[in-house]
Length: 103
Length: 387
Image (tube, rainbow over all chains, first blue to last red; front, side):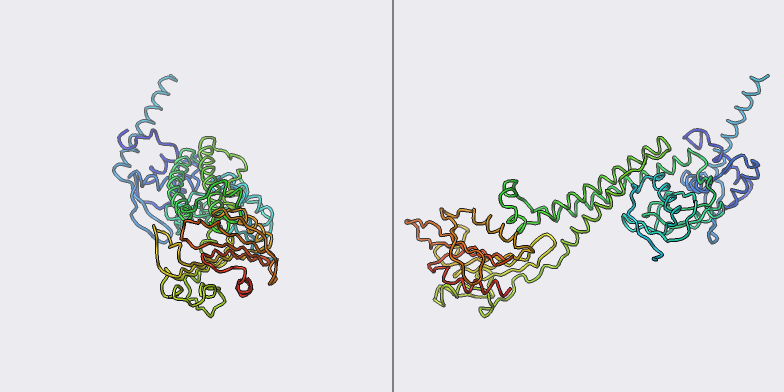
């Protein structure tokens, strides 16, 4: 893996990283995004989200862009984009493999 | 009825599920978590409520809770209640199935980070160990001393404080180690290690260390006070008269020295005083041919201890001399005198030792000179009464 050495992303990780692809977001917006995108399938607890934001920042996948009261805004970094892309390709390969076997 | 209630935290401070369960049980009794102070937890009294608790490992600067953390939890229906020992932010939810962490891998990451921080906290604990133990570094004794002269030893050396320091530190260290073990087990099994007793250990250790700290910080006063012959203390001049050999210079510590230590939690109130007629030293010791007087007085909280001190001191044989009981007078409860066996070939002055007890006060006098110490019993008794 180019950006992330610790194995594939979990579902919450994947969707949190995905939430930054189109625009910057603050933490409270991410929960709504994931809920909407997955139609409630992926649950994102506040502890998980908070820890993930700190972890992604630490790993350089996202960067803080501003603070407004209790809200912090983040954007995805190039490294974050690379990790997401890599995960996307892995998932595509998984789907392709599965479909091939099914036929 | 008080609106706040203190409880000793019975669960180890790092046992997350154990603490969450305990806080939930307290809430069911109407005690809602507010804050912590060392091993104690403060609750506000209210209506019993079924609540789901979650302890989120606090961020790097736990004294200032991250507003973002609060906002995220509030959005999910959790209520922030306070910090638990700078380790966790405590949240409660009325939804009993609410989940703060929905990704085991991320939760494991948070626990690992918390574990590393607490491991580093061990350095602070190590420093605490060092500080407490260094206070008693000079405290040395043998087990036979402790067996045969316990009251004497405990009167002169901070043995109790040192022993309590070791016990308090051992309990605190053990609590820390058990906490780390509980964290490791929790990370591995993702379940509570049961109702761990680390909380009680920390409470006991903290209480003991606070006692020792109080003992250490107790004021020690009166070192080298400017005693005047008019004071009640018996001086060498009282025994020897104002001869040319007895030239007391109260400004010179070598000639005249008096110390007082007020009673502490573990040590009795004590005075010591010594006076040498002339400043002469032979082979590093005071010249045995000049008169000298040394007094030590101990005032114990109980007459029983004073009696034990007399018994222990009277067992000591000084240069062949043994203590013998003398007639009681001056309202003294015990009078014992020991005379050294003089060496006929030595020019040294004879030495007499006197032990007096009046109630819970013991006076030990060591006098080198020609005078009969028993003649001065009224003066010694007066000193003991005047303290």
